[in-house]
Structure formats: C-alpha cells, structure tokens
Image (cartoon, rainbow, N blue to C red; front, side, top):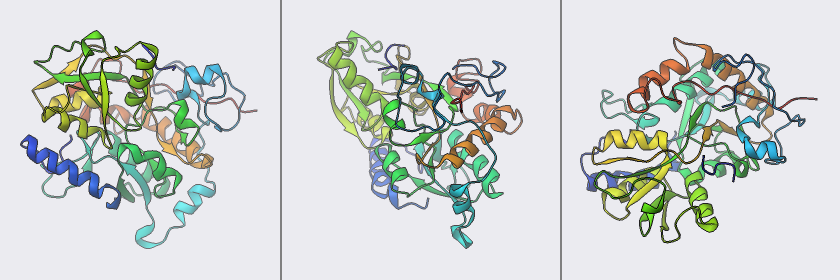
Length: 353
C-alpha cells in the first residue's frame, strides 16, 4: 500500500459517562440530522495547474497506474468555473431545498463540531465547516445555503453513492480504494496516521510497544486498512489486538477513556484535537503514513469536481478569509503555525488530451 511507512463537543462533555451517552446518541441520530507535490509555480496555494503525468481525461476506475497508486491525491480533474448538469440540478432546487447538501462530522473538535459555548445557536463550526461555507457561497451565492447531514465515518461513501449528499467534507483521505467508488477534489489538507494513548501508557508509537495492546479504529477508515494490512505483512506486531472497530472515529476516544482499549489509531490532525480536549492522553511517536484530505463527490459529477477545484484555487490564495485564516483560527493551536500542515498542499491534476 502506498501509504506504508512513510471539538468532539456536541453539547459539552464533562465526564466519561456523559461523553459515552452523547456519542451513542450522535451515532443513532446521525443520518437523521438535516443536516505534496508542488504544482504550477511550486508555491503552495498558487493554484497553478501542476499537471500530473497521466493521460486520462476523467477520474474513472480508481488508480490504474503505478504513478496513481503512489500518489492518488493527484487523481482529480483540472479546475473550471463552468456549470454543468450536476451544478445546474443543485441550483434548480426550489425554496428551502435550494441548498448544497453536505455530509460532515459534528463530533470532531475544531474540524466539524457543535460548539457548546456558541451562545445557544448550536451551529456547526470548524476547519471543514469553513470550507463548506466557501463552496456554498461560490455555487449558490449564499454561504449559509447549506443542509448539513452528520455522516458516520463508515457511511461517507454510501451517502455519496446513494445521493443523500452532494459531497462529503469530513476529514476524508484520498486513496485508491475510495477513488474506485467516488471522485475527489484536489487535496486541501495533509496529515498522517498516528497513535493516541494515555500519557501513562508504555506505548511509544507505531512500533513493537503495541504488542498485546487493544487498538481501536473506525470501520472503513484508512487507519483500519493500514493496521490490518501491516499486520498481515508483519510490519505491525502480530499480537496487537485490532478487533475493536466503531462506526465513528470519536467513539474510539470514548472506548479509550472507559479503559476498553489501550490505544487509538487515527489521523494525527484529529488525534491532536482530541488530545487538546482530554489532558490525560497524548500522541505517541511520529505519523507512519502520509495522507491527504479531499472533498468527495459522485464519480460522474465531473462539473462539480472541477468547480470545487476552482474554488480551492481561490481558497488557498485568499490569505485573509481563506485556507490560512481558517487554519490559524481552528488548528494552529494544536498543530502549530510552522508545521508541515500549516500550509495547504499544492494541487496537481490529470492531464487532459
């Protein structure tokens, strides 16, 4: 596999029992809510074309070449501001239904969460949510013309394929398995899988200290795929217990707090925010993969993919109200202002014939 080696506040959670109850409710009601490779000039955020060495004109069929398997984040269509049939259908919605329908998380602190201190509005906030509003502003002329649908980790792809959402913006890694089922925008964030465990734990990172440890991952997550694959090839110690899987990644933190597992493996960007919430846990070791988040859409929604990529060009370049401002607001406190994540990844696109 190419990735080898290399505010869960809903209404405030004051204790483990309360958090477990809240998360259980979040899962039960989730679907009911209305809810770095430089391109162009080589400067992150420049929005240059940065054409990938590929000849496909459309992102169809997953990763079909070694180059795509090595860097699936390049497997997207060039930007365009033109409307097509998908965007036209969104704009044709009438009345209260004239909204962009987006699958998001409502449990991930600083990414997509309901802030209990927001004055009672309960509005969703976070880095991913800022991007949703930017896309809605561009397509529908109103940043609030959004119907949010809270989607569990393991329902992101089904929600797209079933047409329940127009897109998913939910810390979703671009990889080959997913590209066989959905289309992705250019990447908007770089991260990597990392271990989260209690500060008192003897676990040191993604290494042999995971022997005989109970590890929690989310079903359908890249963490789950990476760990099960690594265990088969011997890159992860065979006695690590991977049996605990959950629908939502945040549920792993609850299991950890309850003492039902010894460690969590998830994206370091998410884990850092969870560690910011719970002072008894911390990141262990360095990231052991390199991954990129993208906006996921239906495979045949080529006009929407191109439009989102065009929006991302402007979002990266906008230093006042764009990507950098959102990062500084939501993520710099936990990820740092000078880390490898503190600039948007530069895009590359498929070369068109």
